[in-house]
Amino acid sequence: MTATLYLLPGKERPVRQRHPWIFSGAVGRTTGSPAAGDIVDVADAGGAWLARGYFNPRSQIVVRLLTWDRHEAIDAGFWQRRLAAAGAARQDLHLEPQTTAYRLVYAESDGVPGLVVDRYGDWLVVQFLTLGVDIRRAELLAALQAEFSPAGIIERSDAAVRRQEGLPLLSGLAAGRAPGANFEIREHGLRFPADLLGGQKTGFYMDQRENRRIVAAHAAGKRVLNAFSFTGAFGVYALAAGAAHVTNVDSSYEALAGAEDALRLNGFDPDRQAEGIAGDVFQVLRALRDEGRQFDLVILDPPKFARNKAELDGATRGYKDINLLGLKLLAPPGVSPAAPLLATFSCSGLVTPDLFQKIVFGASVDAGRDAQIIAHLHQGPDHPILLSFPEGEYLKGLLVRAV
Image (cartoon, rainbow, N blue to C red; front, side, top):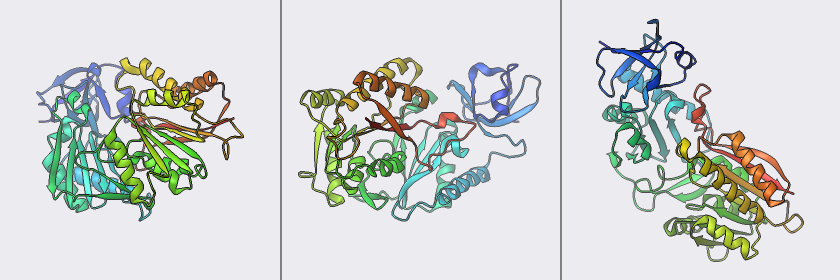
């Protein structure tokens, strides 16, 4: 018999509004003895059935909801339907054939909390981020193979968020065969090496795909500074759009070597058309400022600065500092071939778009530069944001003209 969690009075509203998380503090009592990972029903304080999801007493999010249909069983057919729907939704994006990498399943936004699946050509990379999907790994891997027929499935369940679920970090080949050496993907016809077994995230930062094209449209003839460059994708797009020169800055020598590989794959000369600078990005940008270096387009795509609320104040200061440096490195109007631009991003979900805009505003005031927003930038449409789950929106950016 399925166990039932009864919510405290007044705690049912988010569930009725189809938010998929129930926090432990919202639960009043439980009937039955559910084990970690079991499917449980959720009812309001008066006993009215609300929803069904999987249970994890080790997590602050004690239930992640899967269905609001009392008659929908959570069985093999359920997972297959959800995966099929996610795949069909990506087909509706009409991604061009020259793009071979995209997010196929985006967790709560696709009705499968805790499951992330990225497609890289003929391969899938999967992350089981919660206990509810982790204990159903075999079933979900079989469903992915049946639905998408990949050459292989790589598991990258090595995200720190698994520890909050009481799970170890895991990675490796999960099914089929691994991709060969020198594996590469394409975005809008551009070529990039991708390390599915050992690279950052699931092998590539595909959530910036559309933003790279938007920013590159303003790069022709410009000197570009690409800070927190990782493997240099923004730089490749900029040179493909006619940028005069790209400077990639990253803390990792390995990442900068990957950036050089990506430049060569696309026919660019990393010795003539680009440079790579390794070091703490904050310190490197201060050094460039002190040297009097100037750029026409500055791109700031830092890693997540705030992983929890306790880190938010420090993250705010970090974003302010890095944007102040970016604005000060922009050439004054009249020196650039066109108006100098700052493309700046935050992938910290706790930093709201409104707060991020205020941070960049504060940096512009301190830099003594008037600034105009010419575009608001977001994660790509293969990372959809469920209206009932705003937490799914994590990437936000601004394309700013400095005048």
